[in-house]
Length: 315
Image (cartoon, rainbow, N blue to C red; front, side):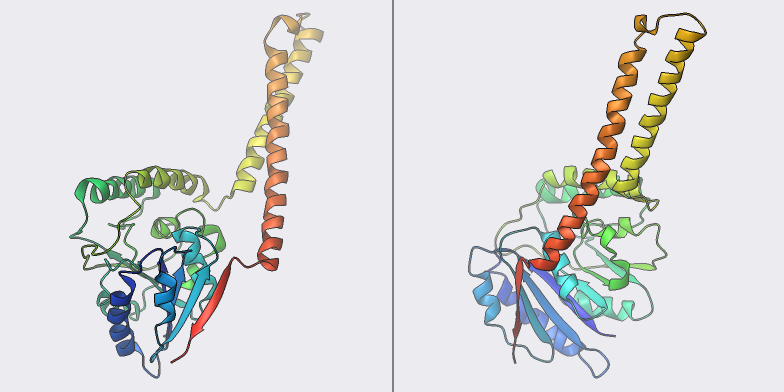
């Protein structure tokens, strides 16, 4: 099996060198005639010296590829860039802040090569501030398990190994890397969880806290809507069709009042209700048109314009 290791980094100039030294030892030990590895760093528009430090690294038994986002996007977008440009089918994800222990990759690869589809780490003994990071994570994981029926203990653990075939485009919206297992609940994916060694953050600071809970809740809402293979286009279409039916029914009822019961429907709220349902119908179908137009434009822009550059390091 061959692996692409994807690491998003943003302003990690202090942590990246020590992390790379640890990774190099692990990855060099993993490389064999039957197992090739590429290491992909995705620099998410860092404004410190992260990119300069990345460019000094030398490839060893494994290839090093640097994707440099031309501006800061997000961790999810950066990981997605890494996925798009990875050349191997098996993907390993971990953070670039040094809190994930690269040694855990050895055990996870061993487990993955037993035939599972997805190896997911969990941080049993977290080395984070309880109130700013651990507590929000506990709350978020609780809601994720309730809504998605996922059995994963720690959805926020970045250390994962998965086959690229399970990462369909319709699964890569929002903070997909945080809720990846929850989005695959209805797929026939064999998942194994492995306890990982979580370490104190030595350098820099995290940009996450209680605000992450609200982002998770928004993602969960969409997962709940779309977990039966619906997408936003059809959801809006169903709402538009439902509004049209209500418009039709209220119009027929008004005609019944006027022609059969000899009652003036003007004395009832039906005209306003009918107009509101009619406007809702137009709005929902207009949204469908706009969504499809935006999708087409995004597809054209992606084909015509790159928002990153690729740098391959030599030995």
